Amino acid sequence: MKRVFILGGTAEARELAARLHPEHVVVTSLAGRVKAPRLPVGAVVIGGFGGSLGLARWLWEHPVDVVVDATHPFAARMSEAAAEAAGMTGIPLLGLRRPGWTQEPGDDWRWVSSLEEAARSLPGKRVFLTTGRRSLPVFDGVPGVWFLARSVDPPDDPVSMEVVLSRGPYTLDGELALMREHRIDTLVTKDSGGELTRAKLRAARELGVPVVMVRRPPVPPEVPYVETVAEAADWVDGVA
Image: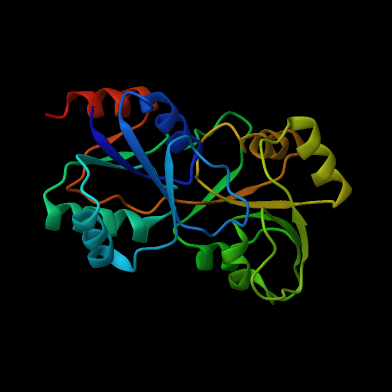
């Protein structure tokens, strides 16, 4: 039996916790950015650590055998902090990242490297934003553009755009209806991957709507990464 610490907040993190528990002692950390998060099985720690040193301090005070970074593919700061904390403590660390989306025939994707570049590269005037509430200030105030933004929780500060509160999974029919109702001519999203929100890409393809796709940030080069929960579970079992 190992003491496993999962940096979570994703469906893969919850699946991994369920798969490992009760064979191992599992603790999952959540950032606390969502008011009513879906909780995994096992123990849960909610809140930030204050960077790599804070995380390292927590690991020294709460000894674990292995750490799995199963945070969102765009949680770059957390992944960097995890890599640095693992280096400080000597605790084995694995990254778990689901694959990004694959462009299919009929897709019109415009790749960009940041939210700021996305805001400067909008091909249309009625834009559907699915980049999360913390990104909305980047787009707020872009002249001549109407925005529909979707997020789980309301924005931290008022924004001059229409906001719909919703949590996936989403269906193709639902996404088609939403985009038709609001006459969407551009979709902006991050290359998060996964099935929970893929339907918006299929809807955009059917409607001929271009997609401004934000590339993933790079992962720490010193950390090994896997793409599936099964691979992560095998790694946990195999670490001496």
